[in-house]
Image 1: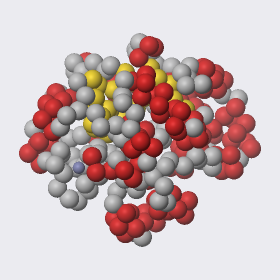
Image 2: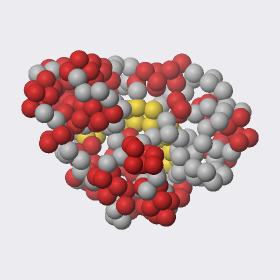
Image 3: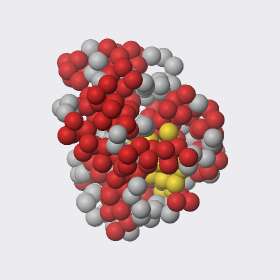
Length: 278
Ligand SMILES: [Zn+2]
């Protein structure tokens, strides 16, 4: 069994990428294992009983045995060759290593510093101090040096949404995953996924249609998501949509602060130059 992970900042698109890669038969996605505890609930089955994250199974889980338990359970659960984690933070992956879990490969998923800051500001207070702190964090995540560079596949979210077929086929070739047409339509992969945590908006692509329709009308949705998200959630295509709202959503002053932050701009350029599918 091989173990792969998605590396990146918060809001880098890791939930959508998890679903895409899980379109391949041999991949079992865990989601964000940092949120697994003895009361974990599957984010796909939601309120229905989950065949993977059963009550008995989650009750056996402790901070120390998570990865060992998950590995055993995946082996019993089906014929999978790859376990995929979406914990994103390199510091979290480093702590896995200390617990004895070695990763074979990582997908380094990134957006531009502008797109990243836009996503962050949607959820946090808008001020320039926060922006610089977040830009430092962006640099820190992507320049972390514990991983062997030959095990890293650099993947831009913009490329993934605008040039999906080329990018996904190259990713498959690099990661030794047989390409499957299902990887291009998230609606087709939903029923095999049992992952923990992640981006609620992305889950609307794989939840049953009736459930999504009801959910979009709920108070929780109205309090947390915009009209843009509702349109996305109800779209039939199952494709992730290219998101360039930062272009109009950021002020000129904000764009100026971001472009002046050299460490994050430089690391972004470096990552673009490391893409294997260009
Ligand atoms: Zn489930």
